[in-house]
Structure formats: structure tokens, C-alpha cells
Length: 123
Ligand code: HEC
Image (spheres, rainbow, N blue to C red):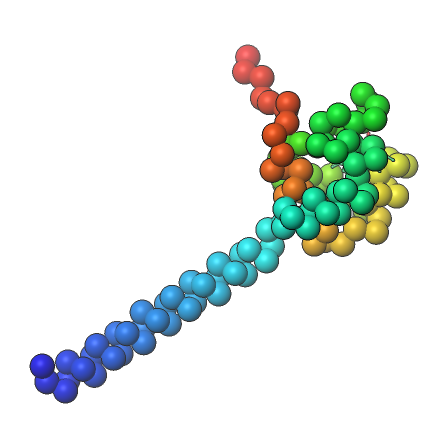
């Protein structure tokens, strides 16, 4: 091997390492937006189980919606809309008002992760 070969492989190694670092940064930035299921579960235990039930399936009243297994992006949208007032409900407006964007993402990730009875009926 000549010293040229070393120079090339050194540059190549830096390029590959640089790519890996960039890929890892991209991944962690992507994850920062995804909800944290564990934190979502903690928050749900404090703020949501009283009405929506421990498992997000059996609510205290049959007219209260099932949250378990609901689409994550739908849950984010619903909670955000209650918070902004785009979706109006006296009870949920009060529940969503104090939630941060991060808490909403965590709650949505948690409820979406639970097994639920919701399904798409094929016609
Ligand atoms: C005091 C009872 C109560 C509490 C506590 C409560 N909810 Fe609700 N929730 C309701 C009711 C009632 C509705 C139906 C409102 C409507 O018709 O828009 C609802 C609706 C929702 C919806 C819309 C679901 C759908 O299918 O459209 C989401 C999402 C939701 N709640 C999440 C939460 C989360 C997360 C918490 C905890 C931070 C929480 N709720 C706490 C009573 C409650």
C-alpha cells in the first residue's frame, strides 16, 4: 500500500462516519416528535382514566369515546382541536387546555398503542 491509499481510505472513513453521525442526528430528531408511550401512560393515569377508563376502552359512560387503538394522528388532532377551540366540547376543552404539545403527543402515542375494539368495517 502506498501512502496515497491511506489518504484515500482516511477520507472515505471520515465520509462514512460523517454519514452515520448525520443519520443518527436525523433519527433522534425524528424521535423527538414522536410521542413517548411511558410518559403518556403516566399522564393518562392522572388526567384521563377517571372518564375514559384505565384501558381507554371502558369509559364511565357509554357516550364517552373509546381511545384505545385509535389512530395516533387522530388523537393528536382531536386534543389539539379541543385545546384551540376548533372542536367544541365543554368537558374536553377543560381537559385539553393545560396540555402541552409534547403531552398531547405522549397521550396519543399511549392510547394508540393499546389494544382496542376499534376496527374498519369492510363493506
Ligand atoms: C370528565 C371526563 C373526561 C376526562 C377527565 C377526559 N375526557 Fe376525553 N372525552 C370526554 C368526553 C365526554 C368526550 C366526548 C366529547 C365530544 O363529544 O367531543 C371525550 C372525548 C375525547 C377525545 C375525542 C375522541 C374521539 O373519538 O373523537 C379524546 C382524544 C379524548 N377525549 C382524550 C382525553 C385525554 C387524553 C384525557 C386526559 C388528558 C381526557 N380525554 C380526559 C370526557 C373526558
